[in-house]
Image (cartoon, rainbow, N blue to C red; front, side):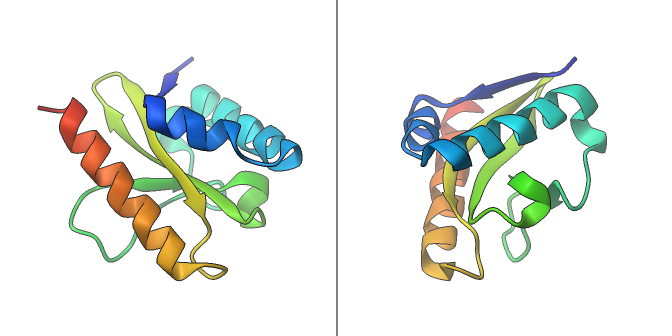
Length: 109
């Protein structure tokens, strides 16, 4: 079983999700805990177009309008932000990716 943790800010973003979406995200997190780095599409994918290595967790096999942005740090996965899916809200998606990268850079110093 893998360890998955949130940054404080990402946990607040997760808590703010609607109940149904938070439950779907919790299921996706459980898959990440069970499968670890081998969790692939459609549940997880690498975020394209950024220099940093960051992945998006995709609840409900990608049909959820929300994503959790994470990276493996040592022997655990750190969810650093939660934000909208790119096709529904590209600007919000990019902001969530940027927040995740900044937060991950702070904890990896």
